[in-house]
Image 1 (cartoon, helix red, strand yellow):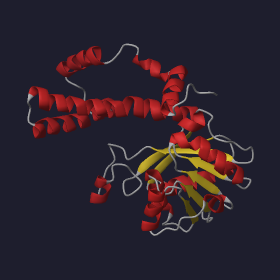
Image 2: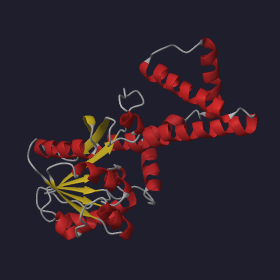
Image 3: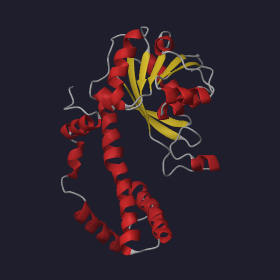
Image 4: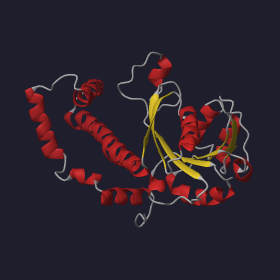
Length: 284
């Protein structure tokens, strides 16, 4: 797509707002940056960008990116969506609020959610900049998973153009439903993967502080074996030894609850999203 778009970034001075704005600012698109907080406005201005009032930023925007925290998306969308022109696309960065039905809707406005996958642990990195970019959006390539609430292919194409730009460099954009995206984030990657990462850190600290293993030795052993564990289980690179399989079974029996897969039930998804958004319950 070569069309120059008019894009508004709401929350442009926040963490994700700054990240996506840095990439959008390098394009020929017309981009307006809105930010309410004083520290955020300072960050936008320090980056060489002009802060625009929200009403002015969105009035002609074809795409409006709501780069605000999940718990703020309800009130922010209530303020912004009524001001949009017909046919505009509202793009949010996390699925929780969309799944919980907190976004203010209009029949003539498209709603899209797009969440970055972050650079894969198996990504072949060729430059120091790619090695340093663990989050993505700077030098290391990543995939993005997105959902559009209508089946409009023209809107999907416009959204894909913006998604590829704001999360660049992007390998591919994978399209799913809002509910499926919610099962990916938080269930798969936060409830499971990020929790396991935190558990690994606790295990490292116990190895050092309780057992007394020197920290450099413990860290080196852990980081190398994390790579091997992921390669063996997710890519099938090498089989685990028989002794390792026995230790893995012991770890599962000792650490993991038998009913842990219940997190993939709809009721559990509703429960965790309600907690994240500080709701009594999710109303579909």
